[in-house]
Image (cartoon, rainbow, N blue to C red; front, side, top):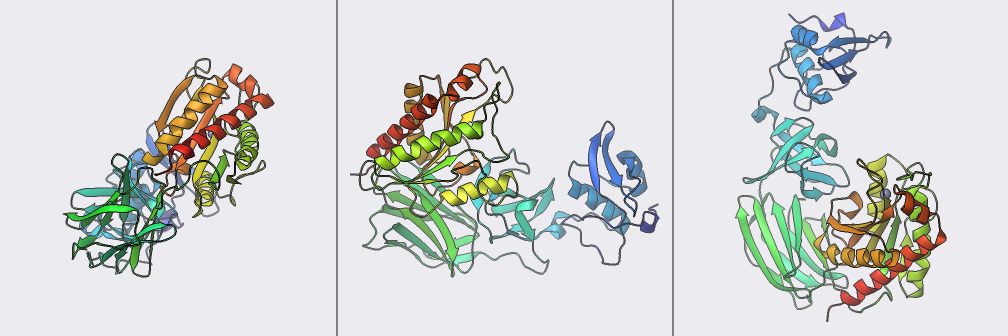
Length: 469
Ligand SMILES: [Zn+2]
């Protein structure tokens, strides 16, 4: 027996994306929940917001006959709302609906949690078809053999009248040279989900298009193109087309994808054509800043200050050697207009992705998260795209040699500011601020100078090496 909603006299704060309630249904209150010893609790707020009643989930389940408890507010709300409305659970077929990406970078993952790896990252404005919902994630089949999950907060559910997107037929693909590099143009009616994968030996870029059928397998390579050697197009499976570009040069510089005016364009950036730092555009990102101090050492040294000092020493060294240097923050302030940690990182990533940028270097210093602070010391360097592994290795070696620190490792890691293929991106952790001896060194001017010299020398070595004959 479900008590009438009026016995609580309040509105609900949200309902599941799957549930369509009639507008005249009144719902009981549901404001917050947290984990207690006996499971999940719901906090119910009377109309005047007081007093707060916490009811154990088990009692509510008797009242509302709910069928399943999970740890997300959305599902709990849905279950209560379902009981009140007297509606049945939506089976997946009824639940399916169109959703659209709204985040600057929407992660498509292999499973319904943030712990799952990313299959690809999409810009805003891509319509996807969701077939299920679980724990705050929509299940989005990209192709019959490839299923992705997307976080609820990254997308907007579209009206139920929006039909499942039909497969698009690609009738024209061309490859032509421009000043910026080679542009691959795929004629499409509307934006699609895609993935770009980079390979180094041999140098290859692969563009996967989802929801797409190749109507013709021809790809025209115009004489202006100097970047691609061989091109291959194939239909991997229903709705999944793959374009593979064997590149005519060894050291890749990055790629960008844009979709507008009925076409998708992949820019393969032209390779570096001269060695050294002269004319190279280098973006320096001193980590943290403002309210975010980063790691703090045993005597109170703040990582954000050390990062900034190193950046201030590095910028003039690079300029002396002819580089064009952009520093994302030059004082103790965060980058961007606020809006939380993710928005701040997005501001750094967006600001570093200028069309002419040649290299992104994020400067950090490390701390032990868990474990023995007396044991962790030394230098680490991180990268994400394959093309960033070479400069990561070079910068790591220069830092360790110059600072005489322990060479811990270089590491592939999907850090936010590294997760873009538009240019080589590296994040250095020069030393451990949590280590007493290394923290002491960070107080000296000499430490920042040595870091800056090592990074400048490393960048010079990379650009000398990365030139294509
Ligand atoms: Zn940091």
